[in-house]
Every structure is written in structure tokens, then in C-alpha cells.
Image (cartoon, rainbow, N blue to C red; front, side):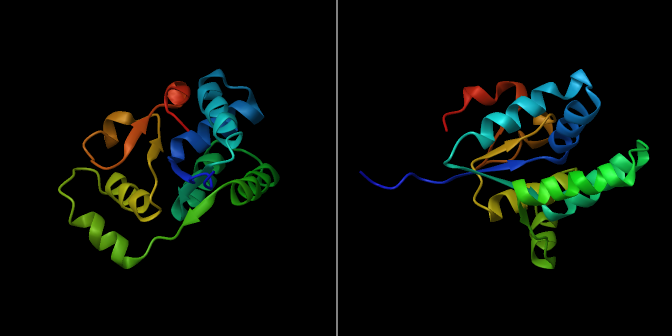
Length: 148
């Protein structure tokens, strides 16, 4: 038998943030994100990717929510050990700007997703990514609908 094929999955920043708030603060809204991440981490063929700037976005969001710095530091360390960061380069930004799309940040994330050869984007904002081709978008609550 052949070797298992690696499946790359891009995790949008909103899923990271919702996962944190469910795990640490018990906010029910984040439960689908938490369950999706647990499910994906249980799959040996799946490799999880995030945009490098997502770490900054998580830090900023948690800081604005008055999360103590020690908890933020623990969360950043957790993220760094669980996810592969996709570095953003000037070439990536130029490529994203060449995409005719209203939201530049989403175009950048899509570009990074393609750069990492991800098959899926896990996001709570599926409508933001539905116009892009070559990558399937799925909400965390529907994660078990994809074949991994």
C-alpha cells in the first residue's frame, strides 16, 4: 500500500479565537470551533495551517477582551505548537491585490491558503471565501462532512 496523502487545512483566525474563548472562558459560541479543531487534530493525515499574521490578530483580540497577558502568552505558545505558520511575503500581497475581490485581507488569506496547498479553509465566514475557486470552504460545525 502507498503512503497516506497529507491533507492541508487552512484555519481562519475567527476559528482560532472562537476555540480559545470556548476552551478558556466557556463561551458556547466557540464550541463548534473547538470541536472542529479537536476533530482535525485527531486525523493523522491532516496538517493545519494559519497565516503568520493570524497570531497578531489573536493577540490583539484577546488583549482587547482584557485577557491577562499570561493567558495570551500560553495561547500563542499553543498556537505555535499546533499550527504551521504560512509566512506572508510582498509577493503574496501583490498576488492577492491582483485578485478582483472586495476584501483584501480575505484575498491575502486565500493566497496563503493556496501557497500552502490547502484543500480546505475552515471559517465561520464561509460567504467571504465562497467566490474563490480551488479551495473548499467549510464552517466548523460542518467539519465532519468533509472526507479526510
